[in-house]
Image 1 (cartoon, rainbow, N blue to C red):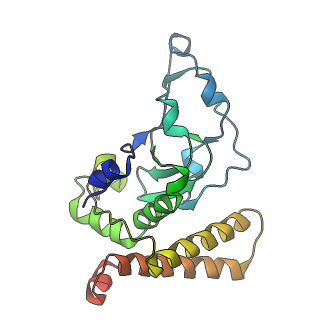
Image 2 (tube, rainbow, N blue to C red):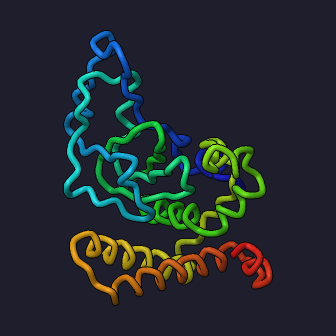
Length: 219
């Protein structure tokens, strides 16, 4: 089943782009909604896969925003998807972002499924899928359309699956190390981060039941 089908099954909304700023004649644009002034703003340049460090992020500074979007799309927990990098990150708290980033919102009980979705989008499997199916791969900085993410295969694992449980454990380890990396330099941590990413990719392949030959082709 596709992500689009599973979104409906899980009660999730489809990916929603962030706000657009007003350029020129700012005073003629709507004022920035209060809710955007009260939550951290993620500049697109600060986007990283898996983990977003929000500790020094400040609210949006623009006084006028053209399309602020609905407040719900900024409320955590969220999967954030970078429109041009085929990357995703998991964020538990409320956060704002611009139209180059989209969000999928879940519930607190669905955190592990959100983390699982992040692992899939960051895996070679999704890059390979986009390479085969995207109408824009190799064009305009290789940025797939948001609706093309909705068409990708999205398997919902059994919660009791030990591979799935191990993947979530690895994800949490990875996020902890990435949080440490943002404040300290540790070469051993850097090595372990890359190892965890590779192990997560292998578990994605395993849950998707890919043959070793298929895995080799994708990588």
